[in-house]
Structures are given as C-alpha cells and as structure tokens.
Image (cartoon, rainbow, N blue to C red; front, side, top):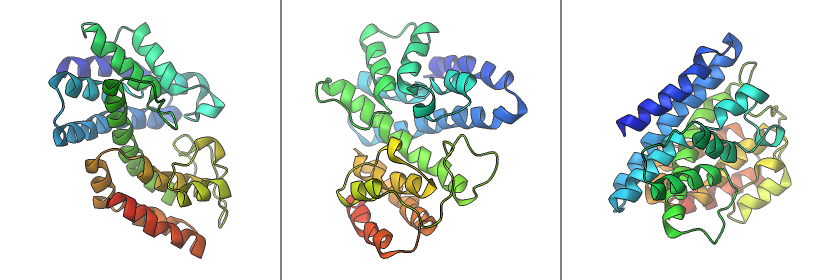
Amino acid sequence: MKKFKETFIDFATPYLRNATEEDKADIQLKFDHSFDVFDNSCNICDSLSLPSELDETSRIAALFHDTGRFPQYLKYKTFRDADSCNHGKLGARTVLKNKLLDGLPRRQRNTVLGAIAMHNRNKLPDFISKELRICTEIVRDSDKIDIIKVLIPHLQHVGTGNEAPLMGLTEKPDVVTESIVKALKQGKQGAYNEMSCLNDFRLLLLSWAFDLNFEWSRKEMLRREYVEQIMEQLPATKQIHDLYKPVMEQLNS
C-alpha cells in the first residue's frame, strides 16, 4: 500500500500547494478524508475474511474514492454534484487519465475504477459482480462513517467558511423536507437532491444507518454516538423523536 499512498499524495499535493488561502481548507478536508476513509476500510477488511486480492483492492479503492473531488473543486468551487458534476465518474476518469493505478493488475484496476465510479450512487445496480459489490460496499461504508464525523461539527457551528462541506445549504430552524423524513420512516436512505436545508442534511446522515453493509460500520456509528449527536441538532418534535428508535434498532441489528 505504500506505493499507492505515495501516488495519491503526489496527485493531491499540487491541488493543496496551488490553492488560494480561501480554498485550502476545503481541499485539505478532502485530502484528510481520503486517508480516514482508507483507515475505516482497513478496519472493515480486518473484520472480514476476504480473499487477499479483494482485501487489497478494497483498501486501494477507499484511498482513491474521492479523487474526483480535487478537479471538481478546482473547476466549480463546490462539492455539490448537482451544481457541478458526478464526482464518482470524474474520479474514475481522473485516475485513468493520470495513470494512478499503473502496475495494478487489470482485474483489480477495473474493480477499483468501478468502486470509485459507483461509491456515490444512492443505490448500487443489481447486475454488478459479487467482487465489485463487496469492494464498493466497503468504500461506501467507510466513506459514510467518516463523512458523518466531518460534518457533525460543521453542522453544529454553522457559519462562513464551511459552505463547501455543507453543500451550500442553509439553516432553516424547524424546517424538514417530508420526503426525507418519509425515507427514514420506511427504513431507506434519503436522497441528496431532495435536501433543501441543513436539517435535511442531518436527517440524510441518520438515514445512512439503513445503508450500512457491515457489522463494523453499524457498531462504529453506535460507538461514536453519531445518532445522539445528530438528534441534538434537529428540531425537538415528536416527528423527529419517533425516528430515533428505528435507527437504533437498525444499528443494533
């Protein structure tokens, strides 16, 4: 893995070096996030009994999963795909263009590229191979666990300078979008494109409990007390309170 870590650092460092002071924090956020997601993937892989090749492939995919965020932010100054481009697909193209996986056998390379391209989908397609599905699910879980960690403090202290992590959404006290609440009630993951305010973002993060694929991920969300921290930031209404039990039941399943 040392070679791939060095390759990623060589790719990402120029974006940091050439960033304006205003942009540097947002790019550093994604740089650090990439390695934290990699660490999460290592924990998931260590909890599973995977073939050695798939284990390695999953860790590499986790490290490179957000490669598209760097050119995305450089061009559009946002991490919101709806206002720019699909960062998963851009990431796969960027890895190919920059030959970041040179030396990796074709089979593994194709799996990594597939996982990068699909990690940000709301739902994975049914027709993909078992190997690609497992790899992508590891990346998705690893990503979600770290995104929640990153966003909770941003959502707690909303102000200038954190527009990019919060995707330009604003605080609207006591406002929630019914379709996202409905998704949670149905035990489904909410949709990014339905969010209209920061409470919706908080609900979306809670809904990820229903899209975690591995026991390690569910236990980690409980261990870090993410649910309680997010609930504290939401309106203290019965509608919101009633969401707590099904989310906790899912995480304890």
